[in-house]
Length: 226
Image (cartoon, rainbow, N blue to C red; front, side, top):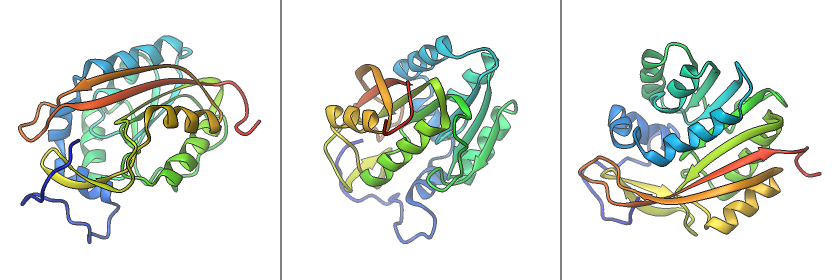
């Protein structure tokens, strides 16, 4: 993501759908082409799979087209529930990864049973939420993890709130945390941050520039707040 000017392909903010749904309905398969082969994303999935029990139950937050995350997890023998606000993305994912379950829903509102998942993936799916929403969601995701379960998260680390950026040629508003503040937020949610990996990635898209990416590997050791 980078700061930029208005473009003809700007996402309209008066649409009644959530901003993320508008954006990713518009991007469709172009998003997969731009991001699906990011080496750090693949490495984060390998890290998670190494720590999952056999036939684990996993949650993919912001599941997009289903690739690479859901497809990789299913290929490793695990069950996947993918949740995305974009009906276009959910339709693509269901077609591309028939071995997973995909649901078109807002993860902020979806009921999640405590201790129901062995692993959770949150790849770049927080950036159009407020900081309060991100913090509340991470607390809920931590509760949804079984004790000893693992969570991998990826984001664009930056000390920004509701800042206009250009993402793959679309004007959007983004909110994030600086790296240390993100770690504090995750630990406050009840997660133990085991490691962090910062890298730079340039999506395969003509309107994309280099992006700083941060991958965080976490474990739930206890009950959030205790």
